[in-house]
Amino acid sequence: MSERFYAEEPVVGSEVWLRGAEAHHLLHVMRARAGSEVLVFDGSGYEYRCVVREAGCSEARLEVVERRMVHREPPLELHVAAALPKGERQAWLVEKLSELGAARLIPIETVHGVVVPGPQTVARLRRIAVQAAKQCGRTQLLEIAAPQTWQAVAASLPSGAMGMISHLAGGRPAASLLVGGRLPPQIHVAVGPEGGWSETELTLAAEAGWQVVGLGARILRVETAAVALAALVVLLAEGRAEPQPERRC
Image (cartoon, rainbow, N blue to C red; front, side, top):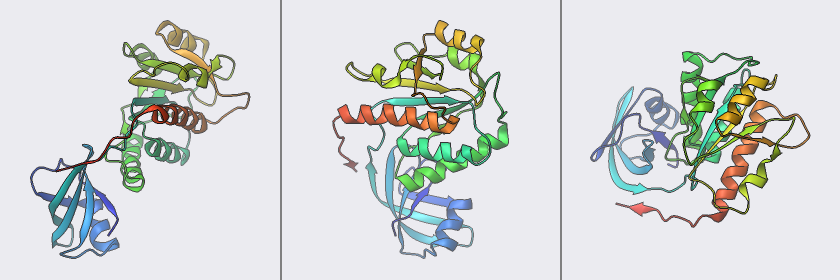
């Protein structure tokens, strides 16, 4: 069985319990029974080959038969701050950032934003991040952070990190910041709302060390711009990195 399952609690020792939606998927969708083999991950970077030992109605006990560290993350940390788009475009954004290997998505509150993300939105996006990780083979989850104001995000750019803020009206091409030199261990990108950044928000970014970048002459949707920037960063970084072997234990 090639399906992957997410353990909400860290896997310790040789036993894993699946409950809730994951147990339902295992027991009632995949129809696993005692003796079935599955892959489990817990967000730590490890992947566990397991055998189902007990299959109940709403939970399953699995035995870990192999534990391995799997290197499927980009060679740098990518943080994406974005004014969330409307409706199902949010799910698409989370799915694609997960597939690309982004470490963190920060929903931001902006002057011209059309979506004010609340606790229910964040919880839903976190569930989508789990499903996306299961599908794309990641052993770490895209973190969905609590919503923040752009002022707070702009001011929190860590020392030594690169910050890029996408803006249609100007800025150097994003790719020009990433080619030629050594990439920092952490890159932060920011994408504003459909109504664009305010002048005050752009000033805050410049004062905090963010660099304004362009993504071409065409107007991109929020999710398109975020994914385009993420893909640019990750693919350039991975093109320079040495492959990491899997470690079994």
